Image (cartoon, rainbow, N blue to C red; front, side, top):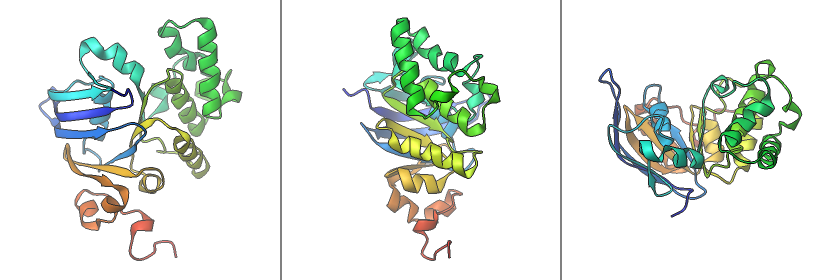
Length: 248
């Protein structure tokens, strides 16, 4: 079984307050796919992402990563396979320097000093942040923080990348840098976002969430070409899929 494999089997999740955030979610993402997860606020996207590496566990149903069912006992293995990048990079950057943040995962994997150094250098190079190595994270711009947060995940060599709103709150130049970065990855990827134009550019498949359930799952052209579906789910149709140009 490939490690680059993520499956949800009839997953339900109910918060302690009784709110049912996921209702029978099922899908499978295979090796090398870049899949977008879209939906209005409150549709269940962030709750779903937290299930991919066991930060939340299903009330019922199963999440399977690389053939391994996510349970309390399998969390160490699952978290080496899935790299989760949070929407707010400040939730991932807590060490005095960028270098220490990127090294944190490999160090806790008990790798040798030499291997940690290789992974830090490789991850920072991959996100174009080598020059930020000795910087203090709190002094970085929003785009720089996003890139470093991604590097903290890449340094652990995950098979699957899961990202929550990677382009949110970025200026146009930083947004373009992040999109180019994601486009360069060969990882199996699940990307939750409200950035429909980014989805149209990067992803061949879209999963649409509504009220905690999967409302649609299909190729991007078909999903984004269905204006009635998007309207029903509170989503905006990307410019390139509109019958009348929004750019002219």
